Image: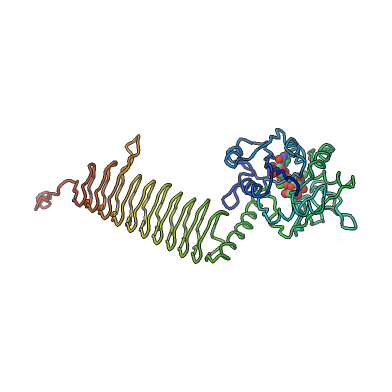
Length: 454
Ligand code: UD1
Ligand code: CA
């Protein structure tokens, strides 16, 4: 195989999206379209990956930096051919692959087969095409009577007969670097949009007798271009369907696929059941035999085996085996929950460790806490971690019991086996095995109300 350089086109306006956000940053299954394409490009054996950016490029920079991708700027959007030209210094002497930032569903198997088809046949230029029931909006592949590739005609320039052609250009194409440079030099912008079309390079090269390959993909869904929000929803549907199918094949029960959203990097163990309304994003990993949902919303969260999570939100959290979360719990970043723990309704946990077999059943806030094993935290307990300028850490020892409506004014340390009486506001450390009562003593005024009413 020849040395490969991969370009990703993402300089265009994306006007049809009608959005303040750059078109290629719109997400499909929770991941920006451009990120899908970059991830794919990075799986290829390319020497270099270069993204062509222009319109509102500052929006794209954080992603490019995060993914360590080079870029070339197309200051004025004069067409896809002009965009490719902006990266000419990177072409090298091998092959140049062009991907589109708005074609996010392309799969690695198709790309590898395409690269092999191009180099195996020694073509000067190749493209991936597909036959669609409705080709509207795409460039069409015009073939001569023998069926050999002749040229690509854009929708806007296609005559009535050409409009009927349902073999479309996916946009994804591969060139010998020398042929590409020659073709780009010859490009003209005499067309409906006044743009330099990359697609015209094919007609130029075929006119000079060079070999052109049109690789007809049998996965047309994976080639769809996303120009507007209708297509964005279609892309979401196709990719979600594929992701869910993969999990089903791995032994995960998804009770209602249409009401479930799972990101492409999520891992789920065998015999786990996902109930409707569940959204699993980022690098979330779920173990075996779990019951997730209804309405579990997780981002970058790690869940052990045999865990139940209902009606809850978890962000960058960790939950050990056999724990029960929710309904209506909120685990915020750096919450580390141990094994066989119960985190019940309206409990919020942030930047805290919760030891094995601990119960925090209702209406409690644990912020910046280190909670031991077998602790019982009653209803309405608040870790008062913030003094208005700083966050403080409180520690609660193993086997302790925190009564209802306790305030732990951080930083405090509650020793192992200590008891806190309900309604206490704890400002001092409590030694192990002790009882702390920090509330006003009750006084009963007998016969008070009858006197008061007189
Ligand atoms: C393009 C193809 C069409 C193909 C379709 C597949 C051309 C001329 N047409 O049409 O044959 O069927 O994709 O989805 O190539 N871009 C730039 N700079 C520019 C213009 C565009 O970087 O000056 C980028 C866009 O950001 C986008 C990609 O190139 O990621 C495609 O541009 P777009 O305007 O969406 O082309 P289509 O009309 O969809
Ligand atoms: Ca497009």
